[in-house]
Length: 299
Image 1 (cartoon, helix red, strand yellow):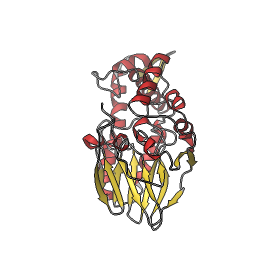
Image 2 (tube, rainbow, N blue to C red):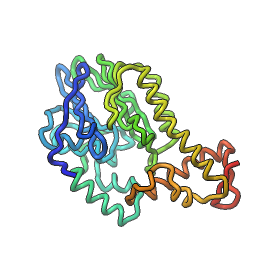
Image 3 (cartoon, rainbow, N blue to C red):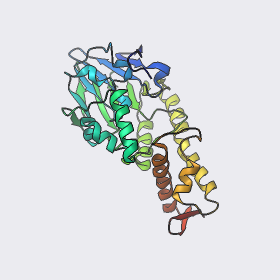
Image 4 (cartoon, rainbow, N blue to C red):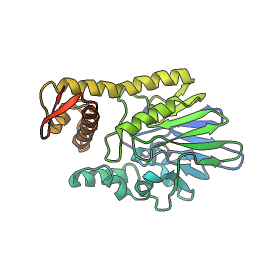
């Protein structure tokens, strides 16, 4: 990955410019926003594409503290940076960001080096926190925070008016489906956030990765329903696997999230946390029972 030669393509939606990263913003790249008002210009989620040649901005908003959403933050050293309070510690410190992934120590060291060397994450101790509903007025155009936790505790979208543009960040509508595998993630919160997005009428819906911008509420809701259905399929796959008693480790090895060819230090921890979250819900719904300590079977 060459973080220094990425570049982006600019596509305008009213007064919102979407800075589309390489491969339509597929990870490790991403899609950023540039919002121009009469008095200020604002950037949302400066990605790898903005490491060099970034457009000037007076203010930076970060949807959540993950490396691919802040890789270009070094281009805005003099601009105030804001993120939801629940993700503030991770944005202020790369060490806190890595610790929040819940990896074994050797893997954490490797990830820390990757964040530093490839994503240019240095930490922004000057970063400021915002809450749900906070409004940033750039002059004739407002950006309103929409808290959408689940992916991270502080994950947020942004509603830009009068354009009617809702940025939903990593509720990204990809076939991979919702990701809630970090220690600070929540399956229940992610599902509630998807319902909240579904209730917001907008003209355009922007995502961080691959799907880009969806026009029209009906089309967005259709794609959001397909995205949410991945969670249902994971439930079904788990129930099928629990035709006989299994442990969390066995479920993790069977995999609910990643395909068998995917490797990396994050895979095991993410699969275990995801399995535990689905198990908790299915136990609460009496669709799974714990037949002996640490072994679960579908009812």
